[in-house]
Structures are given as C-alpha cells and as structure tokens.
Amino acid sequence: MIPETFSVSRRSALRLLTGGAAAGLAAGLPASPASAAARAWSVTGSSATSLKPFDDTLKRFMQARAIPHASLAVVRKGKLVLARGYNWTADTSFAAGPTSLFRIASLSKPVTAAAVLKLAQDGKLSLSAKVAPLLGLSTAADPRLANVTVTHLLQHLGGWDSDVSGDPMFKDRVIASALGVPLPITQAHIIKHTSGLKLDHAPGTTYAYSNYGYLLLQKVIEKASGVSYASYVQSKILTPLKIKRMALGRTAKGLRKSGEVPYFSQYTGKSVIDTSGSVMPFPYGGFNLENMAAHGGWLATAVDLAKFTTLFDAAGVLTSASISKAFAKPSIGVNSDGWYYGLGWQVRPVTGGRNTWHTGSLAGTSTLMVRRYDGLSWVVLFDQRDDASGLTYGDIDPLLHTAANSVKSWPTTNLFSTYGL
Image 1: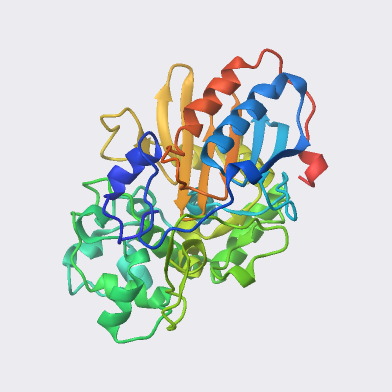
Image 2: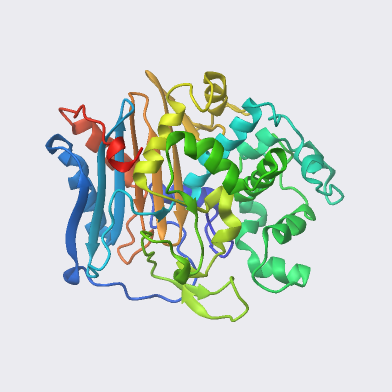
C-alpha cells in the first residue's frame, strides 16, 4: 500500500517490494534507529532442530536490515510446525513472540475476500452484484461506475488506478481540502470524493491494484450482513478457526494493543489524524490506519494467520466451490509474469498445482503470507520496511522458499493447540 506522496508508481513499488531498492519510503525527515552495535539477538517460541534453516534465514535477513522484531509461522499439511519470534534490538523491554500482534497491512485483503465469499456462499450477496446501486453511489461523474461489480473489486478490476490518479486512501489532505472538512477524514469522505471522479479504466478491462476497491468491499460486507465489518469477519471467518487475537489496529502510538509490537521507520511526516500539523514517526500518523480496515487495517499474530491459511486447504468455513472461486482466473487471464490476482490472493500456476500469496507494506510494516502447492504455508511479519541499508525487504520471499527446500526432515507434531488454535 503506497502513499500518493511517493514518487514511485504502485506497479513500480510492487516490483521494488519483490526485488528492488527499499520500496515506498515515505517523504519526511530521517530518524535515528538504534545502531547494530547496541543490539542483541534473541529468539522465542517453538521449532525443531531440522527447521534451523528458517531461523538462520531470519537472523541474516533481520541483522542485514537492522529490523527490530519479527514473527514467523510455518505450516506443513495443516500442522503448525514452527512458531517463532525474532528480536534484534537494543530495547529488551519488549520481545516479539509467536503471539505478538503486528499490523499486517495488505494481508488484510485475503481476510476481506474470505468474508465476501462467505456472504455469497450463504446467499446474502451475489459476486456479480453492481456496487454503485448496492451502496447508493452516484454515477454522475462517470456512468461506467454503474458497471463495477463485487468481483471487479475483489480482483482489482474496478477501474481505479493509483498510477494514474493516485491512491485515495493516502490523499487525506487533498480530500479534506476538496470537501472543506478538517482532518481526520472519514471513510465516507473518501468515498464521496472518489465517486465524484472519473474512473481511470473501463471496469473489468485492466488490472490495477486498488486499496480503495477494498474499502468499498468493507461497505458491501456491512450492507449485506447488517453488522459492522469487524463483527462479521470475527464471527463468520475468525471464530470458526478459533482465532481470537485478531483485531483492527489504531494509528496513534498510544493506542497500541497489549502485546502489539512497536513500529519503526527512518521517516517522519505531518499527522493526518488531527489538525495539529505535528511531525511524527510516519507509522504513527503519516497515514490513517482506521480508514484502511478492510484493505490494510488488521492486527494479527503469525500463528493466527497461519491458521487462516488452512481455511483454503479443504472445505469447512468455505465450501470447495467457494475456495475454487477464490483462486479462479479473472476475465483478463494470466499476466505476462505468469500470475494473476484472484479473489484476495495472488495466484501462480506451477507444476503440481498453484502457489498463492499476498504481501503487505506500510511504513513500519512488511508482511508476507504464502500457500505453496506442496502443502507448505508460512507467514512472516516485520515491524519495519525501510532502513539505511537500502536492501529490499521483498527478498524474504525467495529466501524462505530456499529455506523450506533445504529442510531434510519435517516434524510431525502440531503446535496449533499450544497457541489456542
């Protein structure tokens, strides 16, 4: 998720996230994180000797980038085999563990998509429903808005393109000025402003990653269910999986939940959550996390998200038909890089099946959730996405595949019950 103030485009930022210089550094003033010389390494949680490649990978990765805290969970054939917290920090008053809460950024999108699929499965929503009449959106500015469907939103085919017109989820000051309202703006302000603009593409024709589309999905879920977005997700998706720790996050530093990690960035910016104009650490006011609920606002632990990945392994909360819909090809087909965006997941057909994944990125947050064709899944959460090294954080993806491929013997124990799952 990339603020509109960045000079890089969304597609460029995604390329950076998966293989270039540190992606999407927020505009602002540099801060001074603790030097590596003052830091101490510690590991918490459960694993097995044969899974040491994962520990080694996280240690090298974090120390090279001076990342203070991380958590990793690995699942094999439905069993949690590794649940770790990693710490490289001078401040030993907090140590991340398997049940530490992290902002998960865009890993929120598969959660939202699962909720939409559940509503459709229960006959409360059609995936082909037109969004404008459902939500009462005006189509005066662009009649094509009337053609946007729920599926278009899920697959980022709604017609909004941040490369062309910017990401409205990060245009707080622009929207406040346009509407003549004070900061902080609300979701209703964002929707009112964006509905008054022309689409960048005809709906259904062009893939363009859209956080705003998932904000609209939040409103679709609330309209179809009759309850708040968070209530529906928790009751219909998380509770059946015994996931109790997940919650929507808050922007302000003083509103961190018990067990939630601190967030780090080199950069500061002017607050968008009040009218003070105060310059503050970018993760704690450079964007409005409350407005991002359905596309980037959840807090979760690595083990909880690892349990969430099992939702798509077999029929249960979702039927096999719903799971198939989640990973079906969109109308525009597979892209030139060999993958496509399904319903809340990126999907790559491979020999033997398919790999599905999602990344997440906000100032102070870098996350990855992977489901592999061979029954392996993992979730890794970091509380930093930029540092003075300039190294990419997206490198964790191939590094974890390499670590998994080097494991010679997998444990057969299941740690889920250890963490109440």
